[in-house]
Image (cartoon, rainbow, N blue to C red; front, top):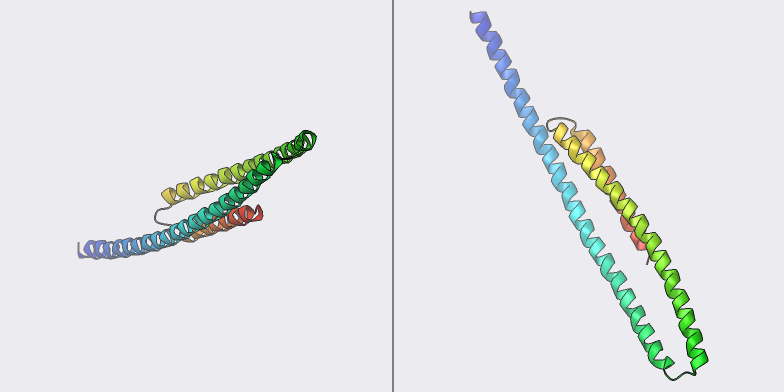
Length: 156
């Protein structure tokens, strides 16, 4: 009877230690998750700044176009027609380029959303273990986000 009691006591101590280890591991994973979310939030601010820069550039271009249009009112009809045709060609080329960029960005967004879903699924499956593997996935996601930021910066 005493021997059984000692075995149960040892088993209890092992289980308590295992629970403590699991809690520590969970806290570590939560800490890494908070850090990754913080980095993502910072990147969204960078993306917003990038968007505002692009918008500013577009508005300046529109201003120049409007100034040209006011100057064109004083031009003879054939010359005004030629300029209008050239502007239409430029606008169509820009629209095609923007559509290509939009398609590329949508593809990247889908890829990142898939990665996020996989990471979330892994987190759900491995609440108590696999912390190192999760950290690697978050790092991969963070690197891919950096690539998106660099990609969008190249369009300036």
